[in-house]
Each structure stands twice: as C-alpha cells, then as structure tokens.
Image 1 (cartoon, helix red, strand yellow):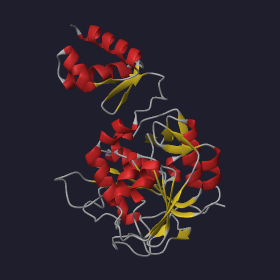
Image 2 (image 1 turned 180 degrees about the horizontal axis):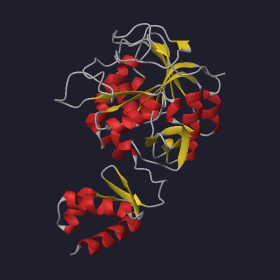
Image 3 (image 1 turned 45 degrees about the horizontal axis):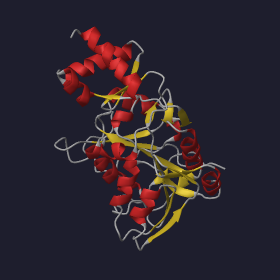
Length: 307
C-alpha cells in the first residue's frame, strides 16, 4: 500500500472511531510506528487530523476526551515525577485546592500521612485517596459528577469555590500553550477550574509535556494566570522560554538517568533540588512555610492578589 492510500484509510478510521492510535495502526498496516507517525504528521499538516499523545483525532474534534483509565496510564512515569516535585509546593498547615486530574491525583497519593493540611477538592478519586489522612481536614465540593472524570461540576461546585480563599491550587489541563492558554474539552469542567483559580493565591499547573501545544474546546485561563508550571524534560527549551516570557516559572523534572534534580528550560538552573528553584513574580501574598518535606521555607506566592 502506498503512503497516500494508507493515509486516506487512517483518516477514515479516525473519522469513524473518533480517534486512532499509533500502535494499533502500525499493527493493522504492518508498518513501523515511525511510519505511522509520519503519516499522522502529514495528515496534521494538511489540517485533516489533530495529533494527540499516542495518536490523532479528526480535525475539529477539540471536544475529544479520553476516559479516566486511559489518562491514568498515559505518561505515567512523567506524572509520577511531576507529582514528587510538586510536594515541595505544599504549604505547612495551609489550605490547598486539588483540581481533578490524573497528575494531581498522583500528588494526592504522594502526600505523607503526617501532613497537616486543609484540602478542598471536587474530585471523587482524590477525596478517596486522602480520606484516611489523620492530619488533613478534607472538604469535598459537591455538584453533578461527570462520569468521565469523576469530578463535581455546575452551580454547587462554582458556589463553593466562590466562598473560599486557599494558599495554593494544583490545577490540571488537557492542553496548554502561550497562544491558546489552558484548555479542556468540557465547558462545565472549565468553569470549575476557572473558579478554583480565582479562589487561590498561588496557582501551580501540573502537566506533562505531551499537553504542550494541545488545544481543546473550553478555555479556562491564560498561562500568565499560572505562577508555576511543573512538567517533564520533554518540554522543549524554546517552548519553555515562550512560557517564561509571560512571567510563569517553569520547572522541568528530568527523567530517569538525566540528573538528580529539576531545572528550568533556560539551562541556568539544571540540577536543583525540586522546590528550591523559585524565581517568583512580584510577591503579592506570603504563604509562610512551604513544603511538607521541609525543603523550602518562607516561599512567597507570585500571582497578583484577587479580590
């Protein structure tokens, strides 16, 4: 089969099924995964599909959303490393909002039993992971629960976030970029994420590098609304600089065998211990002692105060 014929068939499969993945296509057409990636790149260039992590979706399907099980297994190693680095951003005896997201859920699972925090979340999986922590005052935000993400949405959730002020929000996104900001497929989830961002003095985005440049249907903020992005070393130096130009600090957590610390994309901070590389924006609120692992003290929040 010639490449144009194969690409035409790939396009048909994507439109029929809503998504195609590299591994399955390589098996079906008896070619290498790299050949399929080139096909998808050609189709993406032609505006016929949009490449996503591990495959592609038809152009125009910005509302596509994988289920929870699929997202849990995607980029698992990167998410674990991001979650470990994020521990340094937890305030001692402070108030934290945990957004619905698989990387944020990994952070919740990594919080030590002896941690003393007030935690607010609208995610059922995250609440379940923290329910047995004796030092955590857990507040579960209610609302309509979306089956795909197990997250509460709509008016009850929005009202709850409108009534609190938290030290730190750990937020998730399906896509992020300097041009398109923070996006997710569902409007109701986007509204809750936006309300949670407004409720926090400091916003930390936890997102693996495969989400860089991705754009989805519902926008809930700009990257400039984020104080710190914690991602993996797959984020290119060029993309890192573009994000940092808007004032957002970037912490790229290296993979196994690439060093012992975390660094920024500028190359000036490689090898730092997670949680010690803050170069915050103009301070607006002090969160006091930070990090349940004791690695940082006196960290100040970097985002402008919200009314």
